[in-house]
Structures are given as structure tokens and as C-alpha cells.
Image (tube, rainbow, N blue to C red; front, side, top):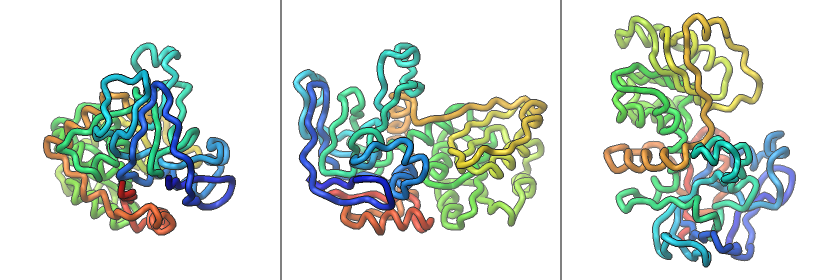
Length: 342
């Protein structure tokens, strides 16, 4: 089978032929139809310090995928060959305190598909049956391929009540764009987005943002004035991973506001802790999705009006992986999906 792998330290990936994965007694093999590039995959492609510290090579990359059940292990029940499915990319231990309490997304022993074990940029991927999620027929293949990042957006945006609230999203990458649509459907009054890339700002507007602000060219205070806001934002979603964006967000939060942090920081941000304290802000860190409540909410949103198609900018064959990663690296793409043609 075809597999896009990280064979060892250094820049790039390789498309090779590998044996089909072994299907354990509790596993499911999925014939991958669509798979999407994540920022994590870009870190692995570039082999930065994080990738060098986490990834064990050789490994098939990719953790955002959708496909058809090809085979099931002998101990698996309730999953049938031919079903449309996606896969949760975090494999949890099941025995730590959080797992036993039903908080699998907080497992301290998490193993990442496409990072610590073979992933979905391949014709076949095998994962535990407990990580398989059935995809409703109403959800098309491309949308199904990005249920993972949509789950991140859903987890972040729905951490706090949005009905009638004013929300600020700093960072309009694919997850930030998805969060705009989620916030709108969840009942937010105004949704303001900031990003330095014009195409991303325009996509955020297509997803329903009230305003899209270019940092440094327009102030958030002027955006608030344009929308008739007098006190500040009720909910802040930080998705950029840039300290300056976090600082801007905190500066315009209303007293008693709520902040969810999804962006990962390359360097420790220098923020005004006194503002957090004096404003009485609630801050929540977000990692991945809530398994599996977030998945149900995400598919519920997709089947009740959420359109994620503006976020999908390119669909390419797996053989064009170098072009696909270059599109992501240079900011000329939002979400890039591989069509594996299976």
C-alpha cells in the first residue's frame, strides 16, 4: 500500500510502499478516502525541535482522515465492514485517573496517531475500535476528513456560553475559521477575527465573522466602536499561538470575560497577569477534543446547517504531497485534503 512516511530526521516526507497494517483483535482497519494536513504534520515535515523530541521514525504521518471500514479484529463488535468512519487521533490509556473518570481528553499517557504510531496518510490505517467514529451519511467526504480540527474548534468555542455574546477570535487559520461558523451557529451576536493574512481574514468573513481585523492596521477598539460595543468582549478564543495576539485579546476582554486558549506558543508569551486578575477573567486551556462528546456536537452542527466548505481550499492526490505542504507552509491554503482515491 502507499504510505507517506517520515523515514528519519531531516526535512520532508517520502511516499513509499509499505505492508498493510496488522489488525489486532481490538482494532479496525480503515481504507482511507480523504486525509487532511494539520499544523502538526507541518512540524513533522520540517523536523523542528518539537518533532525531533516527539516523533519516533519511521512512521506514517497523518491523523485527520476519513474512510471505509476494511476489516475488524476478532474481538470487535458493533462496527461493520463498509461503514463510513473517521478516527480519533488520541489513543488514551484507559487506566489513569482522568480516563477512569470519563475525561479521556485529559489523559496524561496519550499516544498520537501519525506521531507515535502509524497514521492516515496511507491507503490503510489501523486504530483501536474505541477510537472509531461513525460518520452520518449527510456529512460529505471532505467534511468528514476534517472532523478532527472541527472538533478542536467546537471544543474551544463551546467551552463557554455564546448565546447573545460578543466573541473575539485571534488567529484565522483553519480552526479559527471553523470556530467562526460554530460561534455563529451557537448564537453569538458579534464575532470579530484577527489575522495578518488577508486570505484568512476573507475566509473568516465567509464563515460569518462580523469583522476581520488586520493587526497593526486597525485596532480592536475601533472594531468595537464600529459594531457599537461599549464594554468589551465576553468570550475570547486565542488560536494563533502568538503572544502579541494573546496580549491584544486580554486588553479588550470585558470584566468577568472567559478565555479559551488553543494556540500553541513557540516561545513563552509575555502577558499582563494583572489584567487577568483585575478583570476577573476565566481562562481555560484546550487540547484536542472531548472524547466523544465533541464529535457528536460537531456532526450535529454539520447536519443542522454548518457549512465548512469555505475552509477547504485544495483537494490534491497523495502523490502531490510536496506541493500540498508548500501551500500550507507559505500561507496560500487553508485546509488541504488528500484524495487517496480508495
